[in-house]
Length: 329
Image (cartoon, rainbow, N blue to C red; front, side):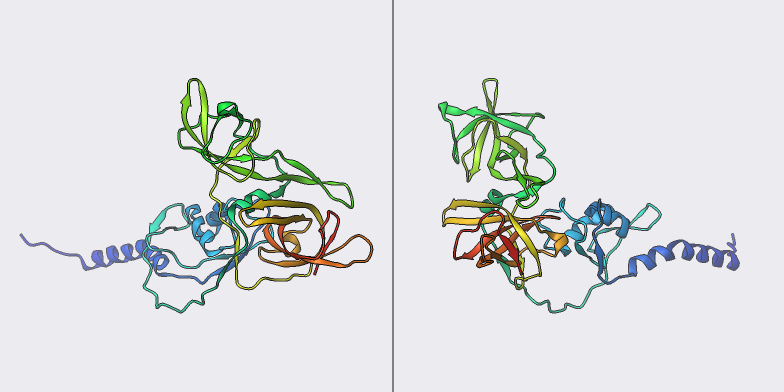
């Protein structure tokens, strides 16, 4: 039997295959350089990834490319992000029509990368203890009901009784929060928000009779009955890269805070300036007295920053810093 091939038919088939696969091949081989993006109100890393990469699961690449983002759930309008170009090995890329394509990047020639020193600002425990000023309330997950062995306060390794809003599995962790403190502006008396501070970490353990119990994993302040439980998330000690900045800023001390730790007593403050005023973690700002002559008191360093407020540790001072004092560069 003789098999006849149609040349024109084969050409049509090859041409059709080329048209079908060419867009995917072009997409897989293409690469793009890093791009800048300014965060808008309502943005999330998930949403930005979905919009820019056509794939929300690429959000971790944005997080890794912007090391100043300490918590991926907290980004703020005005922040400048780097959107990394190219794709990681085995990443899923959106084609734009709702489907996805697994791509493998071309090998790149290694380029020397300047190493920046990470400057640690303070311990993780002190950072969580100082807290931040928030305009939204704590998302309560439960509360402390009482202590074991008729105790009124507990420390690391002790057990306590808790209740949770949703059933909690053994091993689940929660933060223990101090009671929120309302913060008002010392010049206008207007409400700024609530000071949110964390006392420690607990972990659910097997029940004792009919009561839920928890182990105190960490406690840097006294945990007491009726303290609120909140969702646990991974937190690290604050740090920044490079050289500390000294931006032009003019604000006011909202609250002062003294805390004892293993290294002694340290002093921290909260001020009424934040991201929208150009403050970043690691920046230093001078403090001046609001009592009489505007005399220099000391220097603070920013350890956390929100849209409109910031927390700072006092690096040096020649007298006590008080609420209402001026922070200015």
